[in-house]
Image (cartoon, rainbow, N blue to C red; front, side):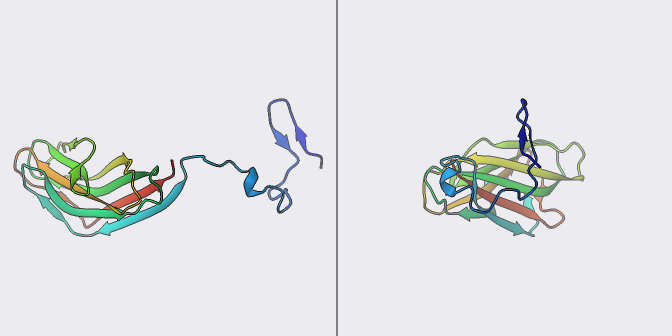
Length: 163
């Protein structure tokens, strides 16, 4: 079958694996293109944490990653199941090597006692090739309780993305 390129850019006549081995070399591929996932570090924690403090407190949920380039970005993802037994705001914030980064995330759960899934992300530019440790700090507005990992899981991901 002949290879046909029509006016709209559609190519027909090539089957999967239709190019001979070695026809495209690494030199012909795009270089310097950002957005490549360089590494993924994950941490699964099964400890239920109770937050009662009205000031930012280290939850001891942490993850460390060593970027391969100073231009890399680190995508942080946190997932947990959350429950509260008080009204008012509940707060989470990422810390990097002991210093607050980004904005504080605020959430409220409308019905006390309900367990809901909770996700939080942040894109950091650490500008280093040394190990970086990210922690989650939390507090509550009203002094009541809220819980992370209520049914037994907290997941942290640190994904290095090439710039």
